[in-house]
Image 1 (cartoon, rainbow, N blue to C red):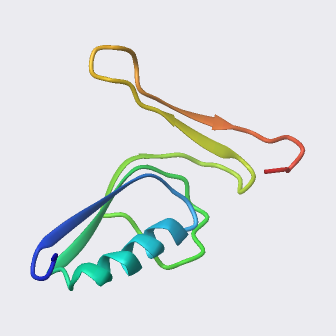
Image 2 (cartoon, rainbow, N blue to C red; image 1 turned 60 degrees about the horizontal axis):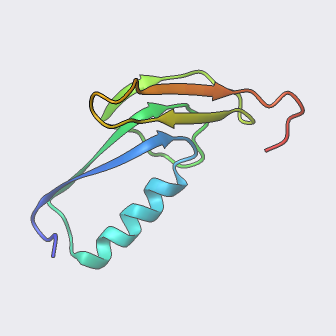
Image 3 (tube, rainbow, N blue to C red; image 1 turned 45 degrees about the vertical axis):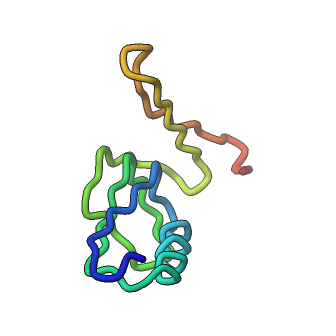
Length: 92
């Protein structure tokens, strides 16, 4: 039960907003939180829904056809990175 609690949703890449919308919808099945904040590692724009993040690690400029790949490693094992993969043919 999340009723009356503060919730922080975490997502790797914020794009159209559909994933966050689905998460918010599912969250309501567990009660009504006092507040919900959204934390994203990467905001790439191109929103289809009126959703914005409260906390953003990095903003990257992309086209709609580009892919954003987030590489996360265990602490001390390697370097974390964000890669924009351009699809020259316009395919997904």
